[in-house]
Every structure is written in C-alpha cells, then in structure tokens.
Image (cartoon, rainbow, N blue to C red; front, side):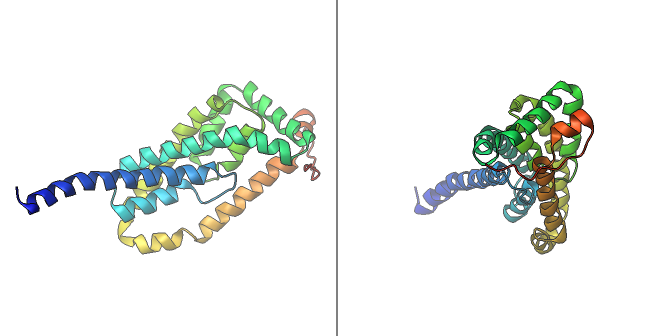
Amino acid sequence: MSNETISDGKNLLVQPFYMWVKYLLVFVSAMVVDVVPLPLPPAFVIMIVLQIKFNLNVWAVICVGVAGSILGRYILTLYIPKIAGKIFNPAKNEDVQYLGKKLNQKGWKSQLAIFTYSLLPLPTTPLFIAGGMAKMKPILIIPAFFVGKFISDSVAVLMGKYAAENAAGLFEGAISWKTISGLILGILLIAILLFIDWRAWLKEKRLKLNFKIWK
C-alpha cells in the first residue's frame, strides 16, 4: 500500500471528525449565549455566522443550535433561583414567585403566551429569569419555547443562508443598530420584571415601582 493511499485514508477519517467539531461549536456557542442571564445577541446570529463560515448543513445547524439554546435556558432556570436568593431581597423574590404562580394558573394560555413571545424578535432572557426566580418547573416553559424557538431560528438561519454572498455585511450586522436596540430592549424588560411590584399590579391593577430590591 502506497503512502499516498494511506494519506488519503487518514484524510477520510479526519474530515468527518472536524465536521462534527464544527457542529459541536454551534451547539456550545448557542448554549453559552442562552445560559447567561444577560440579554446578549440572539443565538441565531452565531448560528448564521458559523453556518456561512464553515458551509454547514443548514438544517443540521438549526437542530443543533436550537438544542444548545434549550439546554442553556434550562440551566439558566436551575441556577437563577440560587443567585436571586443572594442578590435580591425576600420581598422581590416573593413578588416574582407570585407572578410565576399566576402564570401556572393560566394553563394553556400561558403556554400560548410563551410560544408567541418566542416567535417575536425579542430577547427571551427575561422570560427565563422570571420563570427561574418564580421557581416554575422548566416543563411549563421549555415545550412552548422549543416550538417557537425552532420556528423563529429556522426562518432566521434560512434567510442568512440566502444572504451568504453578503457574509461581510452580515458580520457587520452582528453589531448593527438592530443588535444594540435588542440589547437595550432586553435590559428594559429585565428592569420591568425586577422593579414593578407584580402583586400590586395583579391584585389591585395598580402600577407600583419598587427599587429597593437588593439585599
């Protein structure tokens, strides 16, 4: 057997390995973005960039990326209650837990609301911070979020695929005014979650702000 034949055989083995590494990068990147309790740029931006850069199968990128996002959000709902208990005072934690109980009572209506919210171009970080602080079971959030997330990310990544010839502009778009406005909106939504007295609103329909939420 010639050295050239052996070399070709090694290349055939190495290429699939590097391909799997690229998909693993998509998974890990999407998970990291969605595990952080900050309104970072959405995971689909990273999915689009990696799909174009490595010329990956678009549907594989969508499936792997959404799976990473789901895992990241699940982990977020698990550790947020522990952090919230240390940085927010008991009154604020009880307030958000009350909001969570109200969401639980809504049944299919809350599922529809989560699904609709996931379809919109809005940061979903506040949704999972609220769910985690309210100690809602992830099963009450994840299914509706998964369906909405899969649909919205599929649309975004497919559009990105067709824009592959303008990849340079896409990279610039990652820090465009849309991304910045999304970041500002995410921070605003988190502020609404934390500084509104939800018991006063839900019980009395009275808007009351409370900025003394820290321990």
